Image (cartoon, rainbow, N blue to C red):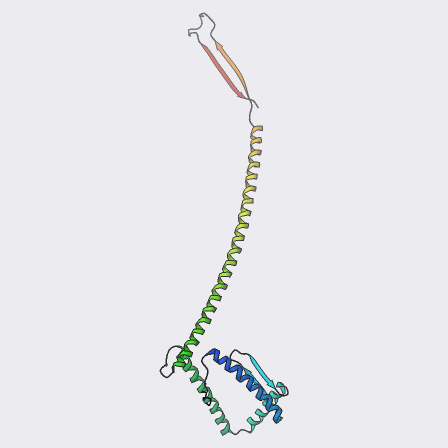
Length: 232
């Protein structure tokens, strides 16, 4: 039974696309090497994968191949007549327009639009591609959130350590303040004790003699008078 014809279009499934790329890349590199040996041709092959990985082959050196290519293209460009140049750029525009239409169609399909002409297999591949994209997006989101949480925890630990250091400094200042207050109170108490004034007491007592006298009409009484004066 013959092998079925494969449609030349972009493979939507990422896994299948990578497997196909690996197989055909190796085959292409092998064919380029065989062509250079069998036909004595100068071959230069450059391949960039969809993940921007470089694969190349040169029968001599890639620099000499590229220099020779640029030289030939410059000569062809000089020899190209205006009509041929116009056709060339028209072809480039057509290719770019075709690529743009394909990208727009793929984008609409990813958004769930224009799905009427897609087969069951195409829809399954599209669903798998969306699932893989969602998984990748979730993983990226979780990684970003994890990194942000780690950064916040790190900043929280720094602030907590600074708070502990500030609390210890405040306690030291408080203890020093208490010590200074005790010293000030002790000095003030000694100064007040040294500056307390002394007092001398003089007791004066006046008393009426027993019996009555002719020159007084007062009743018998005792008067006690205490005078206080402050000694210098």
